[in-house]
Image 1 (cartoon, helix red, strand yellow):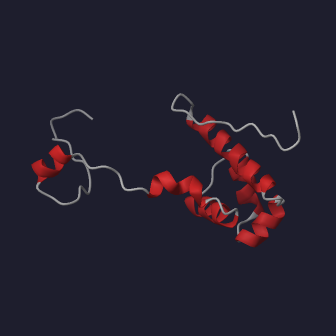
Image 2 (cartoon, rainbow, N blue to C red):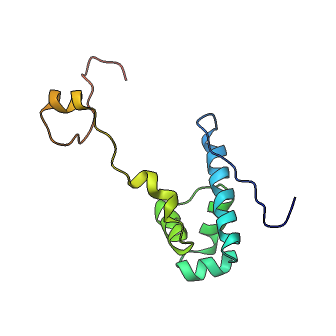
Image 3 (cartoon, rainbow, N blue to C red):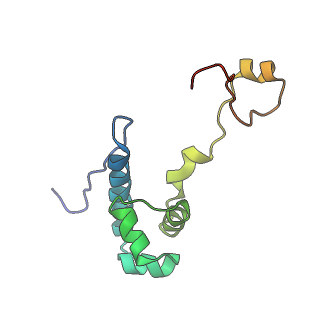
Length: 113
């Protein structure tokens, strides 16, 4: 394997939650290393505890605030772009409910969840 070539771990629906956290952690670690930062440097610059960074990178989870701080300092907000886009609203539901914006989904009480 040549230096600088990094294999990215893709996240799929077939993965368990633990596998997703592990893949996210690997990807965060790769981003930090590509930014030429140690865990301690990222911790100090992004105002995150060293333990929080270690937990995130090892797949033990992280708070959303920790994730945002890490991505902000790594200049990788592009990773959040799909979460920031407006979702499509089904027109038939919009007319049926007579609202401008769907706020939540409600099922009839007799319908199984």
